[in-house]
Length: 323
Image 1: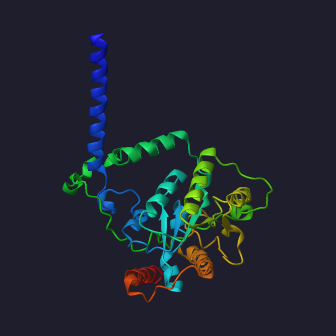
Image 2: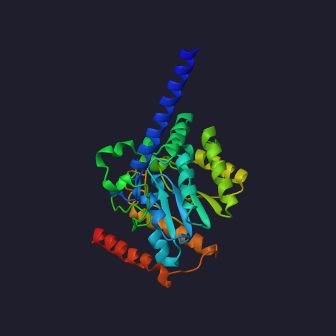
Image 3: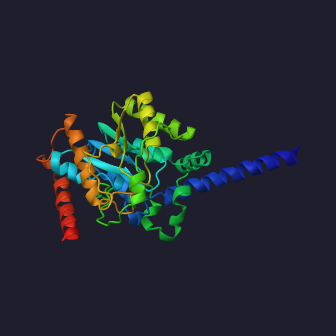
């Protein structure tokens, strides 16, 4: 009996020590700021956490389709509305939910745009387990930082101060046309609906409930892409938006309003838009936002001078790339 008790005590002590080590290492490995040098993943998306409290009017959440498609500084230039691309490559909905919740810790956007490509991305039970483990022990997410730890990492203070000047947008003038075959097949009518995983349905429902709880309008939006989008996915999202009672904008069907030229306006054969294509899409979304009458024009508000500074730098970047 004493041997059994001794073994149990040994096991409990081992687990306690292991959990303690994970907790301590998590405090060290957790990035202490939101810039690349601090080891944060996806610094463009995490730049929103350094924005002043309650200064962002609307956010675009999703995968790389987002940061290639929406230009927040153009919306600022035309309407004085603040927006941000909270997006990361191959983002799964569990991480979309994380970004959404973290955004609302400091911001109160009136509209949240959720790009729909991630809804069709494979997401399994293992992903959820990994995500939950990362939330409890951040060392699981940032374990690869061990070679680049700095003295400040041994402090418990986390302060996001890095300003992302393009507000999450990835600027590129690179152009590689979609093939004639892809263009011909693009958005060909179908009455079939594409399937989505039950895990993604669960997170989509959670996102909708979260937005409703916070009095925020959720808008599902499908950005133009000959590679990622088709009529089957459109049918699915149209049905889901009705079930959730939220707006759905499929920009792939708005060819007159958003005249994407798939020979010039894509950076990678129709997968993502380049700057030329993003300008066309952003012009449409900017007008959509302005038409809601939910936002005040803040271009002459001195507390938003940083936006004008960022706009000047961005326009110089565009001019340099096009000259």
